[in-house]
Image 1 (cartoon, rainbow, N blue to C red):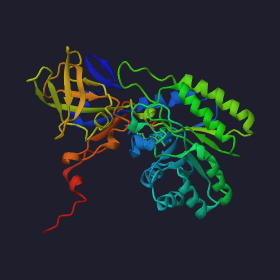
Image 2 (cartoon, rainbow, N blue to C red):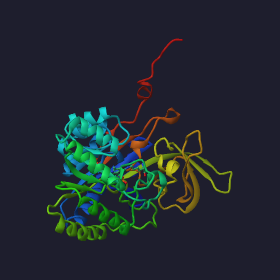
Image 3 (cartoon, protein in one colour):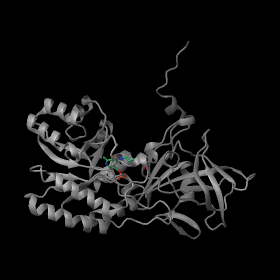
Image 4 (cartoon, rainbow, N blue to C red):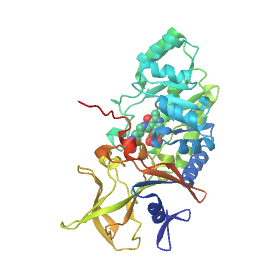
Length: 410
Ligand code: LLP
C-alpha cells in the first residue's frame, strides 16, 4: 500500500474508494504481494530441488487457491473440505498433501479416495493405516523434534508437548510398523513453529531431519512445513530468506552426497505468502474522548480478526482517511460485547468518527478465522490484481446467518 497524493493506494486503486464501493468492514488483498513473496521463496531455494505447497488454512478462498495453482504451487490441506476446495480450484490430487491431526480414520480414507497423499502423525494411526493399506498406498510421516522457538505458545508447534507428529525418539517404533506392514514411506515432514525468524534454529532442525532421513530408503521428499514469518511491527526485521536458502543449500547438498538419491525439499508457507497482502478496512463508529487516552471504536472486532485477542498479536493500524494528520495515541477497539482491543495505545493520524482505518497483515489467519460472534456478518473480500478489483467473497447477509437454524415451535 502506497501513499500517493495524500491517498493510500494499491496498484493505483484508492483504498478509500474501495471502502466506499464495497462498504466496511472489508478484506482487501493485493495479488502483487503474493506474487512477490512466491518469487522470493522460489529464488531463495533455487539451489536445490524444491516444491512450495501453499498452506490453504492461512487464507482459504477458492479464488486465492486458484491463484496459487496458477503459479504452479502444490497445496497443504488439513481437512477433506480444504482438500475438495483445492481440487475445485484446479490442483491435481497428486500435488496435494493431506496433513491432518486428530481426525477419524474415515477422513483419512476419504482423502485417499480423492487421490491425495496423506501425512501420518501418530503411531496408532500409522498402525491402522498399515492394517488397511499395507504397502499399496504411499504415505509420509510427520515428526516432532525437540522444543525450539516460537512467538506464542499457541502457535508454536515444535514444542515437546505439542500434539503434532511422532517424536523422533520413537523412530524404532516407526521402523517396526514399517516392517510389519511393509509400508511405503515416501516422505518425512516436520512443521516449524509458526512465526519463525531464527535461521540457525531452522537449520539445526533441518540437520536433524536429514540425519533421520538417512535411515529411510528411497524418500521422494522431505517437508519442512511452514512457519517462515514476516514483519508485523514497523520495527520488526524481515527474515532474510536468501540467507536461509543458502544455509539450507549447504545442508541439502551434504545430505544428497551420502543419501544416494535427491529427495525434493518441500515447504508449506501460509503466513509468508499471504499475511502482508491483506488489509482489513473498518470504519470508526465512535470516539470516546473522556479518558486520558481516547478509544476509537470500529465496526469490526475479534469476530473478523482474532489474532490480537487470541495471541496478543500486533497488527499495524493506520488512518487512511487522514493520512497526513498529526499522530495521536488511541486505543482501537472492535464492537464486540467484550473487551476487544485491535491495538492498544497506538499512534495513529488524528481519528475522526467516520474515518476508515486499515489493519495490516490481515491476509493470513484473518478471514479464515472469522466468526459470527455477536451475530455479526463476516466481511466481503476483494482481490486487486493487475490493476483490477475482483470481489472474491460476498459480504454475509442475515439469511446466511440463520441459514442452518431451524425455526421450531415449542
Ligand atoms: N504446515 C502445517 C502442517 C501447519 O500446521 C501450518 C500452520 C502451516 C504449514 C503454515 O504455517 P505458516 O507458514 O502460516 O506459519 N492461526 C495462527 C497460526 C496457526 C498455524 C497453524 N499451522 C496465527 O494466526 O498465527
